[in-house]
Image (cartoon, rainbow, N blue to C red; front, side, top):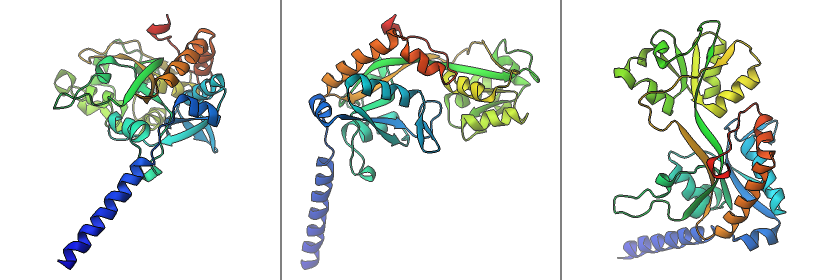
Length: 296
């Protein structure tokens, strides 16, 4: 009995500590953010050209846009560098509404690079409950799509994906391009699809002549071509049959109780888009910019 009592006591203390930890994850409302003079914005770490560091300096279009939004709100920017989880749902939970014990339950006020997608926002679990009901996803600021880049020294053109039956192509492991190219047309291109730990690695392989092309998100491809300064690297204009959605919009997220912050950020974003500042941010990284449908 004494041993059982001791075990129960330990369990009770552990549960109390856990509750305290979750309670420490405070959600700041808009007035609190303005009063504090700073906004905490979550960005993904090591994710060029969107958010990364060079010699300790924060860079990337998401970082620069977050800086501009903070300035428009009249507050300073505090970045929260976040490693990507296995699923976006995990990231939203850890960064926006519940917190993560490894970070001391610290929450971001705003998260960048969240799909602006009605179907995803309305996704329900097995019992019919909204999976992301604690989160508001808003403010589309970028239109993203899939893109192939190729080396004209080894490939004349890419009229269709059929050329990859004979020409090796590089993709990031466990990415949509990886699953796509290794499965379509009865896995016809599986043998010529080469996998790399990152998009940068795939482009390094193309530079070394190990692959003739690379498929990735357009923003990543634009950035790699901008960095390479190789006039023999070119952009393909082919389509991707049987791929499903090939274009999507990227936005932001806040806690569902913080809609006032979302309204203020969205108003500031629209001004930045219409004044051309967002386009200039993207151009500085060699990236094309399509204005999201909401602002056209």
